[in-house]
Amino acid sequence: MSIFPRIASSLLVLSLSAAVLHAETKVLVYTRNYTPDGKGYVHDNIATSVEAIKKMGAESHFSVDSSDSSDVFTDANLRQYAALIFANSNNEAFTTDDQRAAFKRYIQSHHSFVAIHSASGSERAWPYYWQVVGGKFTEHPRLQTFTIHVADPAFPATRGLATDFSWTDECYFTDHLSPGIHPFLTTDRTKLAGLEKMRTEPNSYPNPLPLAWFQTFDSSREVYLALGHRKEDYENPILYNLIRRSILWSIHKKQGDAKR
Image (cartoon, rainbow, N blue to C red; front, side, top):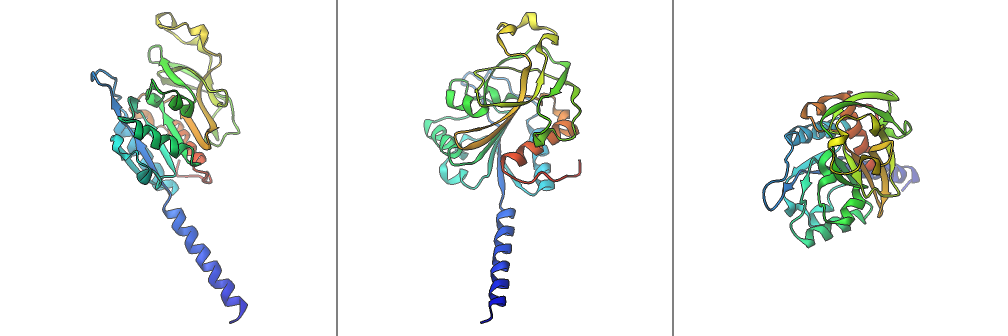
């Protein structure tokens, strides 16, 4: 047999294998909100955020499953996903320590994690989760318009953004910040209104105040975006592309231009 047909055959197999791998890139969007007393805040943006991420997947060639059931956290189920995306989850994300262990093993297996807005308020009693997110939500002043600064214009998610832009949101204050985070969005917390009503001391937080960051922790790529309280903002190209490009960075995909 000539070497050339063998080479052509090998190239065809590699091409088909790459196509299969490309087609099977899948992420899980997780949205569980739960407290035993039923008093935890549940955002009205959850369905909107899930639909936005499904649209991102259609545009950028990854498939999207979504769930609010902690039963999805088993080794067998999680291994099919390239990334976990906690979209406006809050309070208790898991119901058993076995689920927490499966989550931890997933992170330690070179997978990816993206957290959006109130996801920094999930698992408030589990320090490992805070490390994966990069910090733990404490509180925020009233919803308001403030200026966001692009602290890292080289990070792929910030491509095309102005150095400073105006945004209306809940400005999250976060403690237990991990030393390895790389903030790419920040704000000057001294210019926020309503700080006098906060339960914690505003000056105990860093300034500029980190609002979005990336890191590599425990063998996984992680991104956290504090923005996204208002459901209409998931159609705003600024937030939409911040989330989409963060997901692509986390799963090592080329950024590429989508329709936005």
